[in-house]
Image 1: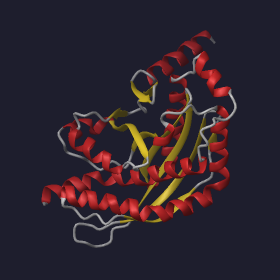
Image 2: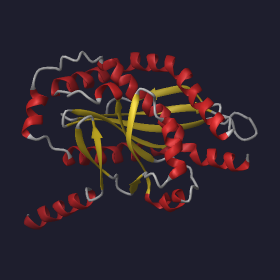
Image 3: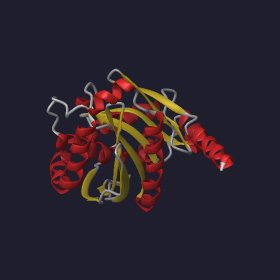
Image 4: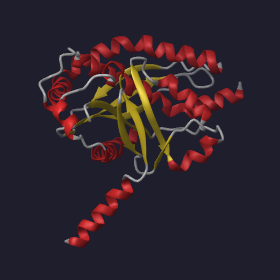
Length: 281
């Protein structure tokens, strides 16, 4: 039994050995690297620049992760297709408030009971948001992507704990290829809401259409590591256990912002195509 415990501790230690410090308001959080992935750094100039264009304006992104085996390529500003990646975001209006356990329970209940209504609201906002992304890419890189979202298929919540809630979605897109012809594609994303140290994070695990199971499993392991890496101290625990915050946050809007962030971020899977088109032009 002792050997088993030591082995588990060594495994856990290795899985958390690479982490990244982020600041959410005045709270410092440690974000471990997902296994097999590395954080995007300013040295990855082209990728860092384009990443900013695929963050919903109502959200803040803190760190993004790409596969280890493409890091050298990305450092040379050669961007491969990136169907699998991870990102950490939150809603801007949550950054400077303390989210209690009761608040987080309300958010989880909202997601589980109002997802259909949330999808309809998000669908109404997407044309304007995606249109701005198209305009920004066209202005910066002289590439007309003509992205549009034509269907979202959310799935039921598949994982819930006191500090996490996860669900996945299939998203169908239209775009134009280099000849101007329609080129539809499908991607998946697993969104995990994590409550740590009085903050709520949106953890996104992106994958290609066939990578749904991988996205769920990888997201679950990563989210667990984020929770383990950020235990609440006594002071934070007290703040988290008080009655719901008086900030009157609309948790339905928070869920919408998380969903919009997930959908917009999926477009990044075609970064390699954007880079190729940029070179040609």
